[in-house]
Image (tube, rainbow, N blue to C red; front, side, top):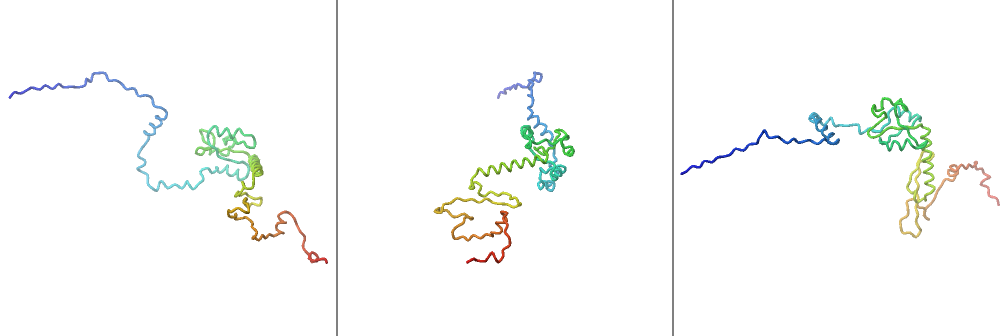
Length: 228
């Protein structure tokens, strides 16, 4: 039996060979923002319990006016509103003619809101909204214009188009517009307020006259005398 000598050639990497260096491309702004957020994560979730997530803030209006602004609105000195905090929306309300124009609440225009003003932007901010204001007399003028536009719009519409609308009356109540159009030969069912031949209509004439401003004197026996 003959023995064969097997020679195994060892292969190894030459550690002295130059290593090609990989150049990391610079991160984009979005990638850099994600990198910082990933690096700042910790294990604070381990210390949270079920009781810590009970939140009663949803019961409050997130866009409630600051107390000083609410007081001036109640006293009818100034009107306030929130608008979207972007340049286009802000310019759209600042460039309107009086009385439609609004002004931004800042330390110059509304110094009574100083503690509610953002130190960076210099305005009163809430989420993605910014607070604007106008004098109360301008607010009243604007509301009067809107009411006039609504009245003009109603005058140009038919009664059928106004069916179902509810408006506030001068006495503080509500009035509903009801209008239907149906031929007598129409097979469709009558509306809930449609007057038909078998209906009995009752009305207090004195009450109707009083509502129209017509007054009558007291009746006497002479008023009931029939002349032959």
